[in-house]
Length: 596
Image 1 (tube, helix red, strand yellow):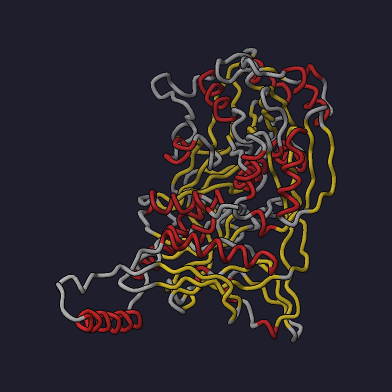
Image 2: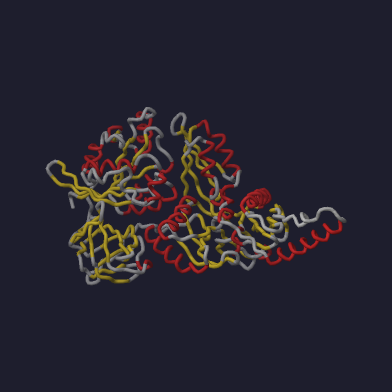
């Protein structure tokens, strides 16, 4: 174990984590030249398309140093705030972390957030300044920022270029010399933490674990503590570029277990694995549960695919533990699931993965957050869906979740950013100048206000320089109303939204205008209305496709034309009574594209 090192790479999005991981794998000859490519650990097609890391990826490397062979277990982590749960899981399985900072951009919000996560778990931090070969690199300035943040010496900061490979040897030496070896007892009862899993259609659930005490070998009778289920280990091994079979995996190692589990509910991320005959006395502590921030309904386009969608979501949750879901029904869309996500990007990725990996065609409803409703009877109801809101005369008060946001930006953009935050009902708590032209703002905001377009607008008004990170901070009383959307006088519950009373009129008007673009024209006029209770506050009309029934009249008395037009009018009236308006998927996501 003294020659073993477990570490992860943490950073803000696009600071060069995956590129640094590529260079480490090449330097240690873990990846052959033939298999080498950019983002070698990002094996999901979606990750390569978007150039972002979505999943944590574990891999083992061997590195000879000073006449000894060292084993390095690396976990590459995502950088986007929506995937911070992946980072927390990787950190729980490590003793050290490489903190990567872009020399052209400096410290940003997610850098600080991930650093605090690592410090809470007492990880050894190795600060790395990346992209020093760039013309815009501010080496001395960013080094000062890192010193202020970590309280380390300038000499401890490694200056590298992951793209060219400059300084990678120093990184490997620092990993061996600075990060402590795992502590644990090989002879103690088995105690292993499950930090990830995936589903293989031929072999069942494959669980990835980090052993803290004891060892596990092929054929062992093991128990998963949280579920209470026991299995025989059909195969155990370590994680290299591909899974490598081993007879025994020891304390301190990161590996995998295949035990023929077919039901995805039987494996939970954060669970402890132990032996049935000689169990450990305690489970592994310090693993946090996930708190969904955004909720949306996911429904199959074909009602017969409901059970297939359930299986797909359960298999996807194995590989993405931050996804939560429960069944729900909608009058407009039938049976589906109310899903909890960590953010809008997370929601988008889940929808895309359902389509690509499971071939599921789904409809996603308008995203919203959860609210606490205090009734006149003294009850507290958690409302995740506008349709679950009680009648107004039964409501005493409604509380909405709030977040504390950290925004780091150049000082020249502070005015527009403050205007944006105030427009979103934000309250400035603190502002700190990190350098003469970089400032950190701490703002308290309602979570419902940042769900839709806050991040996009923040990026556009700061020309991409502002970075954003947030964490939940509590609840506050809000004056909210339920805004219903009606098509031909019928409420479409999937389009309903909970919104502040002051913003309801403007939001309803813009939503109706947007829906008018997406709803196809019928043989009759389609009325799109926004209403609060019985009061209609906005209306748009999709004009009818009209057949010219008077074309065959060439002259004669006007009463001939009038007779045909009256006949057509009666037909359209009858058609409106029995006709259905089809709402395309684009209309459900129109709310996200509203121009502010």
